[in-house]
Image (cartoon, rainbow, N blue to C red; front, side, top):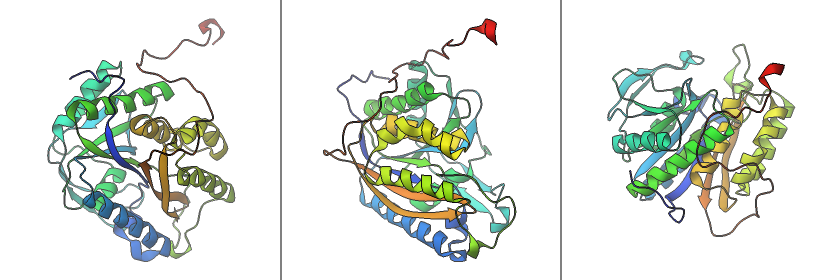
Length: 313
């Protein structure tokens, strides 16, 4: 792979932040909120179809990996998926088209930056609910090839940022125009018992308050500020870190670590108590302002830092 110089910038047409739950795909008629999310997905699909994107690049929080970072590289994965939590809504058969060259290049770029990364390319590998929902709704005719990368459960901020920068390297090296998709909830507290879908709501007022604060930042195009603030958001919302802040780290590192975006919140609704939103971020020459925080920026991953005295553990 060719080196990407500091002056090289990938051509990212826009980004989409969307929820992983299957209700907008399988049962939009059960709740007005589900229908609004479905309409927002449909609007994003239309924008993708009208773009000249070469690739849909997906980071999915419902594909957890344990050791390193996995990237889907089977050219034509075909299977039938059933969601673990919402199996009663029905099956999700899929037949996708993956960009094998990009997947292999992305894995190599990640390794070059010090990460442990590998491709996955065999029949029957279970593609996760979030990726299935996103691709079925955003790219139903496989018009554009896709690439899916996992969310490592134990990756820290440095590792996740470097993973995003490896994606940029690959886009530059292959000269591809991309739509970047993050599949993640906002708040992720869900009801533990079955509810009538017509009565769905955000699990708690605190979750709703923080969701709306995040949406305010997204609407202002403040992607890097969300990335910088994500630890504080996680502390307040107390949700799994795979959902709370890794997506913001990866999205900012992949799209560009700044606030130069035009943001649009197309829908925000409850999904069995969780906060689901469909949001777009489009690069723009203008900016809400310089980033407000200054966490370290990382170019290469060199392992976890020994910041604690082992003798004290």
